[in-house]
Image (cartoon, rainbow, N blue to C red; front, side, top):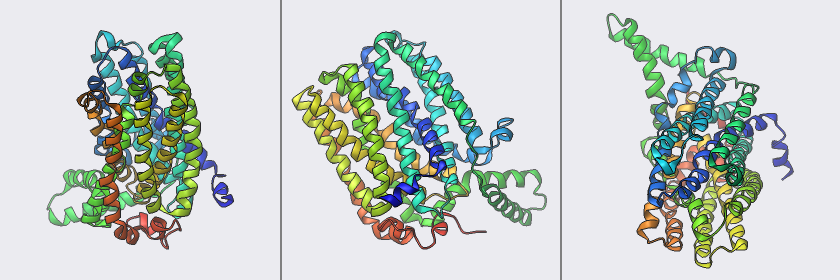
Length: 467
């Protein structure tokens, strides 16, 4: 325990927490807050689920993630560097979308609200790519236990950014209305942008290795063409930017294991995703007030999530990633049964608090391990591209597949208890797949996967071979 606490005394983890907050903050805008606003505006559960599917952009951000590894933004890059310049640009988009959505009224028409939410989601999905790349590059691969602590801090920051502003918005929606609540969150974001400008830029040899790869491709093209010229240079740049990050991932892991890893990432949190999309609607329909939701799901939920996230980092360091994923997946699914019981009992505050605490514990436990898992699998040369690929697939259930959650509740005739039982069962395919690929992952990742100890050659485990 004392060794783990010493890991946290690193100012880099404070920077990671701040950017984790920035990454989670947009979910205070388009998560439970958004669902509750739409519900109170008279939209159906199905319509809320469909509008929530705007978040499917999070599952697509790997398509443009390579640009964040390679494209230098004019003016901003020279002042802030590659990672921070992209983070600040995307936060500007989130701020603009927040101000725009505060002027809309979903009860009078959903198109303006949807367009403003679209801007928030697109900017946020791009910000996630830059934030995750910043975190992985700030903590080198040769510090595996510090990587586990960094995963805990980014998760704690994410839930703080998603939870505290959302709870405050629920409280402010009464006296100020939802428009006033969104304006308040815009003020928070403006302050956050000032903080980002003061953070340090990670130092890596990423650009040198990318330049070497591009030079090798350009030389190969020169040998096969009489006049390569500009076309060859453009082809080499495009290959290193858009193709090589994903080709390297499959080469390093092999096609079968790579596909199995990506399939597991999609399936792992699908039950939690379905439950989370409808959580605010469920709380309101079962009979809780906005203030009760804010205090229990918001403030108390944030405090317990923060505590359990830090404990989750300790477990990840000591038990290893496999046990963390297996235990986290099982307990995360079983926690949904408490919400099924709440649906039967009704608006009981003690049961509500218990369900939120248990759900936050299991979610924090599994999320920290999940973030560490995909961080270990990410190359330091193509950080943004490869992490975005895996993270976007992890978001697929939360952002795209969960769009049918409201329709499922409607199809069940509003039977929330049965809905939560179904979300519990959804975890089974992912856990079965994890058991099937355990041996291959242990060979690939070493003791860090099976026992929590650092692998014998950590840098080699996460960095592609030199050319």
